[in-house]
Length: 239
Image (cartoon, rainbow, N blue to C red; front, side):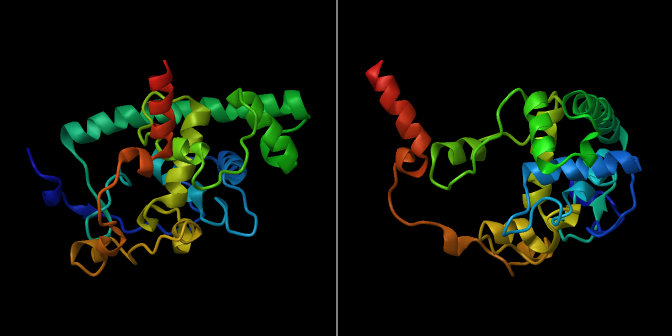
């Protein structure tokens, strides 16, 4: 079995400004771009549209060529054999989820708002997303609240997810992930949360970039670091 370090490097970092579509049709691209722009909207700060999240999702769904970035950020590792077969099968499921999900998104849009999703107003798009998600539009998240902690603790694995949860997860990954994957253009997502990330993955390998200064010294209880645990512990004690 070969180690990932021995896999050849193909392609290069994804260009966030690319308009080339590897998986989506033009209509699907525009629909996904519109939907992600409602999940992380633009206000006084850039949102998913400006961060080019749609490019990240398109490359992610395209197959096996944009899965594992090389450690130095120079490109992507070429998968082969069982690794490639397993990933193709996984992507086939997610591709089908997106294709069917986007068709349903337009169907619901026409039924609820009288037009396809990408042509609706922002308010109309929000209403359609509420319908397909089965939940009301969430309030703005404030750091330090229970809602923020819950969001932080969500998983990063998309296997088996339905369309809308997968779209939400991929939107966040494209907004906050390393720019080598195509999203987070000009580190917009990192700047939004005040994270001074590395200029490139290479900086994490040669010691140029380190997170040591952000580590807290001292003794801490988990309940102090994760307020949600304190709430859970209190409820368990009451029971």
